[in-house]
Length: 143
Image 1 (cartoon, one colour):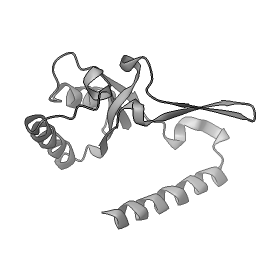
Image 2: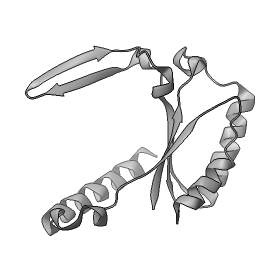
Image 3: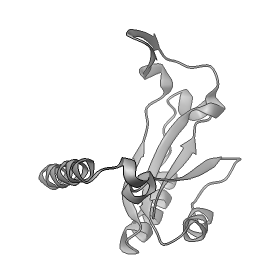
């Protein structure tokens, strides 16, 4: 099972205030634990919403709105992608994250091919497998 772990933004992350060396070292140690346990698939911090944009789709119309966006508590400051055996395991890993000060983190399961049933035809499955193989090769070449 894969889970996306979404770290909610706060006033500091939205102001572009970066973590200090102590926080970076503590988080780095935690990420190493996740990696050594085979849990970590990806982990990234996100720039403030002031450097982002939203695109709204309405039929053929596309409306672009530049950041910043109003509700910091609804925004994402970073994420992990984990592979674990259960939601409970993901929660146990998340409880060990080095956060304090009211940080809010959301855990969401990622869909897998079998979740889509018969609508996900053999042809669509093959297309998905080809894409994932290409992405795997691309990530190897980037590292």
